[in-house]
Image 1 (cartoon, rainbow, N blue to C red):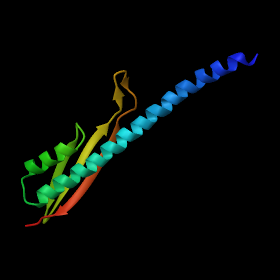
Image 2 (image 1 turned 180 degrees about the vertical axis):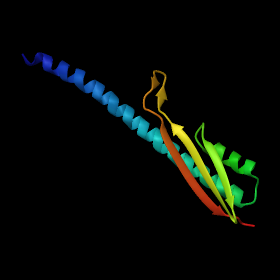
Image 3 (image 1 turned 30 degrees about the vertical axis):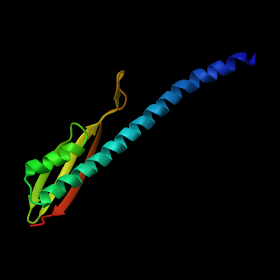
Image 4 (image 1 turned 45 degrees about the horizontal axis):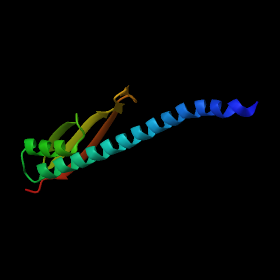
Length: 113
């Protein structure tokens, strides 16, 4: 009588394992994107604080930021404030796994000149 239990348990455990694996992949992708947003905001703030143009600061941010990011620069007195926004979703060939997760990073730097 106990012969079918292993198959039934595997049939229940395998989909649960796939869901946990998908969530783990989603977490890694999200953390990576957040760290890239932070790096992009810092890079743009450094370039703008150095006195370079906003276009150069935007370009520095876009080289580091995840694809589809929006970069906003604000100048106020001797400081520059950079905000990087992106919505991250985990997609594979089969389609979207998780809903879009909005991420945001900010950096402020004081002008060097």
